[in-house]
Every structure is written in structure tokens, then in C-alpha cells.
Image (cartoon, rainbow over all chains, first blue to last red):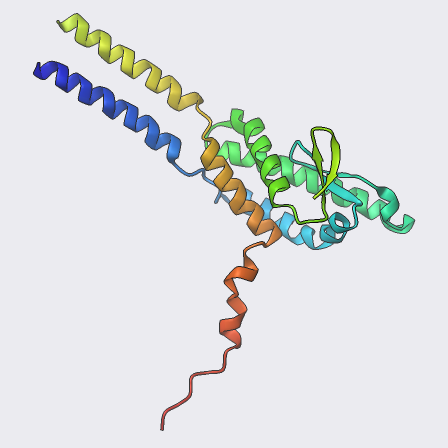
Length: 138
Length: 63
């Protein structure tokens, strides 16, 4: 009887250890992640106006895209294109670095899709976001 | 009896190892994403009002 009890205790301890691992926070404080974050933060000052006027929007896969180039004067379109390109490179790097910092490079896709949902949830009213059926104004 | 014990041990240990290695912590990932997005979009700065304190007049000097 004691052996059964001991086994049950062992079993529940093992289950608990899984729970603890599952509940732990993700590591996001590496120098690489901080560098990408700072780069994105300083770029956001330039992007904010383009989110607001509908020139760009948040895609459902965790990136940004040009939604309406006509919202921007011709002279600024080249700058906008490279802003979007740089932002997406940073975002791809961010997802990759978080996966690697936690010892699971294979988590990159899931981290990316988690971010995709959170960017869209936290987007300001008036910004364009990609839903299942295309662009939607929040 | 010993075989039964060994069996239970294997049944509990093997799935535990596999689960820990492949399980994606969705809740922790959401929390991490929220923290990073708040930083990048500076969504929490307004609520914290860190500049208010620094602008407050110095404490009066009691004579």
C-alpha cells in the first residue's frame, strides 16, 4: 500500500514539474532582442503616421505591409517602402531571436503567430489590420 | 510487483520528457509579446507618468 502511495506521489510530482515548465516566462532580455526592440521603437515614430492614414497596415502573419501607397505623396513612397522592408526584417529577426533565446528555434513560427494576434489586438483605432477576409479598419 | 513499479515509472517519465521538449508555452509567449509590443509602441508610458515626478517642485526646505 505504501508503495502505491509513493508511486502516486512520484507521478503527481512529475505532472507538477511539467506544469511549472509550462508556466515559466519566456526569456526576452538578451542583448540581441533588446537591440531589435530599440531599433523598432525608434522606427515607430516614423511609421505611426502611416498606420494612421492607412498607407500601411498590420498583416495577419505578424508583419506590416503597404496597404494604400496613394495615401503617401509620390516623393515619400521610396522612403516608405524601405521603412516597411526594414521593419519586417527586424520583426523576422525578433521572432527568430526569441525562439533561439529560449533554446527552441523551432518555436519561431508559433512565436510569430502569437505576435501577429497581439499586434492586431493592440493596434490603435483607425489603423488597418488584416483579417481572414482582407484589410479591416479598427 | 517490481515490474509494475518500473512500468509506472516509465509511463510517467517518458511522456514527461517529451512533453517538456515539444510543448509551446502559448500563455508565456503572449505575455512576452505584450511586453515587447508595449515597449515598441510605448503604450505604457502614459499610464506610468514618469516625467511628472521629475517636474515636481523640489521639497520645501523647513527653516
